[in-house]
Length: 361
Image 1 (cartoon, helix red, strand yellow):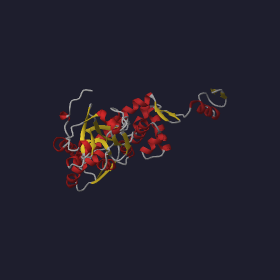
Image 2: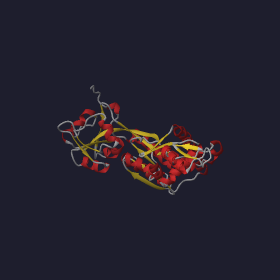
Image 3: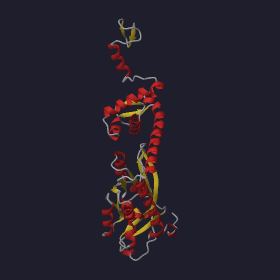
Image 4: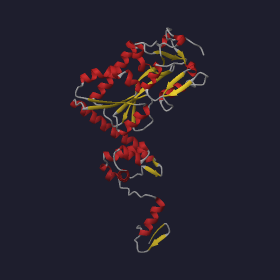
């Protein structure tokens, strides 16, 4: 005689459940996973299961994980259930708004990341041994890099790699991060490191922020630009990107903008429009020095380092953990870093920090 949840079925042998009892058990216990003996089935693990598990863990949602892995949500859910059966552990707690890893899931995730990393390294090694160069590279770049660095890099790179198709996409950090996660770009150079378990982030370079104005402004005409104290920004008419962008956040971490009677902030999410307005009006902006280096040298704009304290912005290279950096891609990034070093040491017409006036606040 068997009993579960108050139901008895004398026709069923001990240890077996009637249909009514099975139904009641499902209501009480939720989705049932038939766990196998892991020692007998662990060899059936495959990379697809591991990738689906890692995607679900990092996205916190089967729906978002399915989009990332280019499969259907029911298909990904079945894949996870089979994996849980294989390893004999429930890996996720299912909730209405997503999934959260169990203790077993957290331990298993660390091992799966190591597995995928080893696979990527093996593929990278085979690609390097073959000396293969892909037909294209697809990189997202922030407006500062696009304007200040790429014109120096591209001509020589295209000459050295005529067989490589180059696709470059310009956008601010949030958009670039979304593009990397969706696979629209292979990697990106951003100014704010994203908090996402599925991305690998490497520091790429840093640059000083400068105040940029037209060179023929009123009483300062003809004066050598030595610098602008951070507190002065509150008094200025500034053109800046909106609050969601990291450059704006770096500035406002040091000063409250537009707090003086003469201070105003105009939001424009676009480098070209911002600089064109600055060139033709009494508005100013704050950007990385790289973005305006050429125009300062030509006398079209004037840039002053900010002090009290100085403001710096960091750039990061981001990619998904399973993205391979091909020979052509690594060469492109290496050339960018060489140009960055050359520009900062040789071509930079903006006064160096050591020549700034010393002010005690």
